[in-house]
Length: 78
Image (cartoon, rainbow, N blue to C red; front, side, top):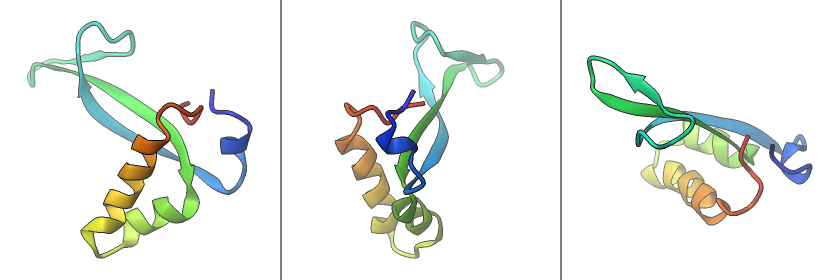
């Protein structure tokens, strides 16, 4: 569970599906497409999430992805 800091109202939940490997305990087999998938959830700053959703520039989305990458060792994951 995300730390108390990231559960504050300044943060929102970001959720997405991505391919993973069979050894991942949260993996789900996607039959027909022949791959394993996993749902990822983490808490991110609301402003970055909103900008990534509505922004017109590619860097709007990259800023959010970069923030998640930079904080992946923090307790942001749900």
